[in-house]
Image (cartoon, rainbow, N blue to C red):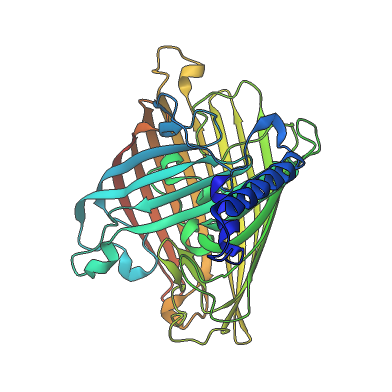
Length: 445
């Protein structure tokens, strides 16, 4: 209060040297009494608390602890928290390291390779009343022997803020793997196999920058629905939009048994009640990209790169049908994709699907370790022949068997899988096949 009085006095014209010391003192006292009367009539904040312009108060933290999301720190009033977690995938592969797409990719010189995949740091938590935040840093991407060093530098993958004041209405802003299909949104640390299927590269939309509205209706009933709808730059991770076009995406998910399935694979927790999800989704974008990945905007085989084409060259329309189910150690997940790429009036069609099942046989035979899961996946992709000017259709297929040993759920597991991969090549009319073995330890701290 004294500071306020001093400031007021500084604004008052000088009393002049002719005024006596007693007159100045009386005026100062009268002014102080007037300010006190004014402040007495001001409204009081509830609980007698003083106003805080920042909306937070300085305080200590509760005792930190460790849980499934890593190390947890929380303010004493519970309004702010932070989780910090580190994770890594240590992998050995024999045979073909990645998914072969053309005849030249089959039966190359065999590779034996150790790879440190997805060395990442995750930070997330909440603040204020409704706000949740999350970001993820990829610390060491791998590269080939002739790859440029900048491709192996640390990069921010996700940064997002969620506000969910009501169950039926919330929104998300930032950059993340947008909620289009399960296989891509399911974390790489929550997968049933060492890697996603051959379908993923062609049809996923990956990370985008934008805004999304989401919510859930009629929870726990036969009319239990989730919805997601958003607009995005459409240029992939960390890229500004070069034109006025925006990517549009919408997903509607029905939970007919009244229970929701989280974005993760394998029924590690053993759902006591059957849980089913049926979903459909649509996405549209007009720009320089025909595909997206963790590296951002890219192009499907046979299409000119985004940098070579103009900003409006490709218009993409794609659709999804999806089913997921879990019950007592059994899990099933299936997606069917359609994608049209309009290249200046010429439309190229892509189709693909995968289905995967897994089961913990301990549920029917207690002699089998409860941590052990067996799984199988089948996938196919029908796509234009990239080695024949996109004329004709090639068909690729994947058959993958997997064994998982969950030491501590998805947070600490060992996965071994074996894949048999084929290509029915349109030109020449020949078939190619090859195999691959992978062993991986996936661990989070």
